[in-house]
Image (cartoon, rainbow, N blue to C red; front, side, top):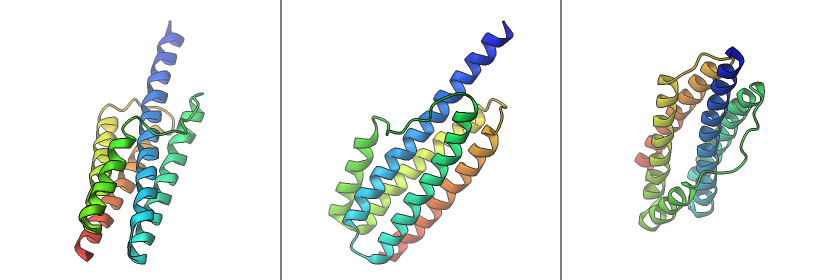
Length: 151
């Protein structure tokens, strides 16, 4: 019976971590769109750096998924289209509009991490990965907020 409960908890953990990974893939796709539309080199460099930061977050979460016997997802969530449309429409207004669209996506991800940490199951490596990724998300948000002021 104990093994069954442990496996159930592990499958929930893997599913939750994969949901976060899919959200990172969503934002990577949005950053790629934003990179194509960025007019300034400075903004392009920022978007590229933030995209790479998401890849590091995926790597951290993927290690936890692998450690718990799961397979990390390699595709975005169904919500990707909405995030990408925000970037496209944001670009029609200005580069600041595009940055605001990315900021909206990052804020949603921060909420996902806050919820995951609140519902945390104490398991190998998960707490550290969630905290590190939440901090990285907060840093990306701060960098985007500064970028809005540059437009």
